[in-house]
Length: 437
Ligand code: NAD
Image (cartoon, rainbow, N blue to C red; front, side, top):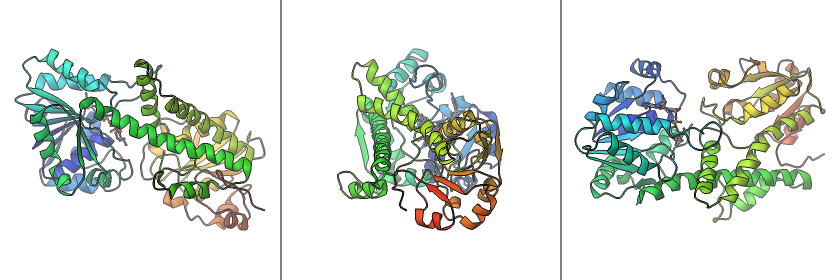
């Protein structure tokens, strides 16, 4: 199969490289010339474990190429995937579909012969209809079927998720397209990954329903954590106690500073807007969005309380900036709101992240960047563990303490055990766990 991927970001590049690895002939297209130039030179513009080797192998085998020239790549394709960004629209929180629509018009102008156009980007229900309308209007002769195939991969484990998915959702109403999509995913299908065909609108909604449900689960345990703190219960045990119930499941029950990242915040908000547009309000999702928004800044206040109620003139050390470990993605990371709240209160921020420092420079100002966790601790009055990178999981607490001005640790991911941290001479604060003395 000749596959062309429009958009070579986290989703486009991983999907493209994996499709090439399945044996398809893949061209990854992007508007960003620097990105494509880097990829042509064997450099990977994002951090994703295993991606460099996967791209290198498939590029070497001649199955994976990169270009900024969309038209010839689309002309030769049997299948064109749209994997461009769908960020929140400034002002109202609807999904900004301008990149998707621009790609649709570009595809329409270039397409030749029967072609399946697949929306892999996360798009609101009904977007496939609009993509189809744009293509028909731009090029009435185009022999095109528009399909929805939302992507469920997680950054940090993207290749594994793509190659071993829980399910593949394909939304279409056309038999020819069904055959093509079955062929595209045949290697996974042979490995028993459930290939689920539904209507196009249903597929679009499955993606948002899934993300909203997960965001709600995280938010639920976060509110439970607050209640645990006030009642002397332990949220870790509450999570385990409910998670062992097969109807609930143990995943996504880790209390923390609130969800962030490139998907949950924007997708929950976009789903809320869709519900309002269709006069079918999603009140649970609305509450999730609101609770999570408030939580990030509340974490800033938690740190201030741990510092004795005032951080003016004090130094706060931040361990981890990205929204989760094993990515360099800073989009909507909780660290941004936490650092802002601390800076507003007069704190000086020192921070370190194994992969996220470059990206964070674009979204956070006035931060002193350190070279590792011990360097962050240097002269700090409080140390805050924001992202649970492995590098922060077994710190030499004696060494950290020696570097700090006052030994206070706020562990927003419940990585450490209170006893061991206190034994090392720290004052310790975590999320939703009782303070035992
Ligand atoms: P991204 O910002 O990393 O990548 C998007 C890329 O598309 C950019 O490189 C941009 O230059 C390029 N682009 C934009 N318009 C273009 C055009 N007309 N022609 C060619 N290239 C164009 O975004 P991402 O994180 O890969 O997300 C892409 C989509 O996938 C979004 O809808 C997102 O919600 C969805 N998604 C993301 C993830 C994730 O973990 N990042 C997971 C599942 C789904």
